[in-house]
Length: 254
Image (cartoon, rainbow, N blue to C red; front, top):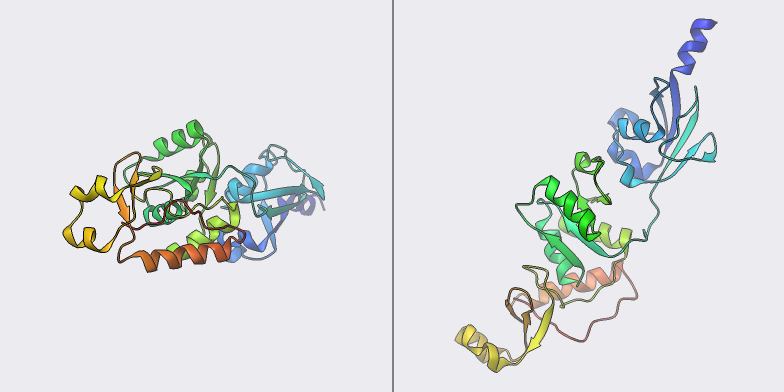
């Protein structure tokens, strides 16, 4: 009997929301999981040891009672791990890791404040997230487990369209399409055609009359051949994120 009791006390019963199954090993992809417990680890450590980043966890319940990540479960406790609620209330500004460049451009197309560099190191991303109060978006689970990280989120989906939909659903950032530079994230401002005519190819000057310039890097924008494709991305985003009217200030494509 003593041996059976000791064995029972070395395991925790964990109930995991289905939305979190993608983070655990295939053999654990079910609602109820038995997890070996050494009697010293906190709830947060138990959850992370299963592969689930704490950034993706909403409520934690310990034996039916709301609990903090730092609490320690007792022998044979029951833990409920719920996914983060959507939409999540945070300020709508982001910094993206080096593997999400296309997503960064699409967020900027929608007017979402999006910092991105294709050569940024992990430590730089974490420092920028903390310094500027930006949510770090990544598909790197290890990066989300860094203690110094201010706020992060795992981006779901392998295709850019899926990733964009995931970010819009999770954070519901205000959309102001056509107001940010796709290259540097700077704000766009209307500019008379005469002021940029010298920077344009003859065919562009002949075909287009409405222009905008980035206040930060000086890049010039106009409604070019890619405009229908970009329009479609904007309309799809509005379908995911209803209630966002079109910003009347600037519309353009590089």
